[in-house]
Image (cartoon, rainbow, N blue to C red):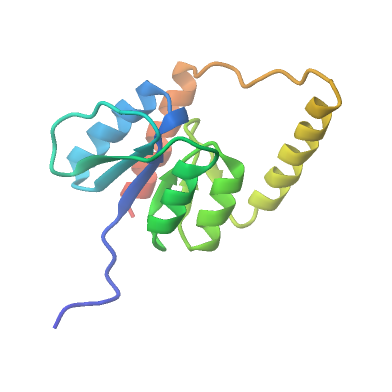
Length: 154
C-alpha cells in the first residue's frame, strides 16, 4: 500500500527575476538530490537537459507567472522568489519560500515584510527615491546555496 502522506519535493522558481547564478545552483542541486525543478517565466529560460528540470512559459502580464506558481504549488514544496506577495500566497498554501539571497520567508515574518513593502511603495509613489536592492554578491550566492542544502537535507 502506498504512503499517501509522502510528498516528493518540488522546487518552483519565479524565474523572470531569478539571477542566473541562483538558477545554476538550483540546476546542480536538483540533479544532485533528484528533486523536480520547474522554472516559471513569461520569457524563454535556458535549462540543462534533464528529466528533472522543466520550464513553463506563461503569457506576459502582471502577476501571470506568480498566479501559475500559486496554482501549481503544494504544501511542502519550495518556492524561490523575492516577490513578497507571491511568497505570502504560497506560504498560505503550506509551501516554503527562499529568496535568491538565501532568506527564508515564513509565516512568522511575511506579514512584516508585506507591511514594509507597502510602506516603501508609498514612499516611492510620493516621489521619494528609495533605491533598489544591492547586486547579488558571492556571500549572497553562498547563503542561498547553504539554505537550499539545509532544505533539501530534510
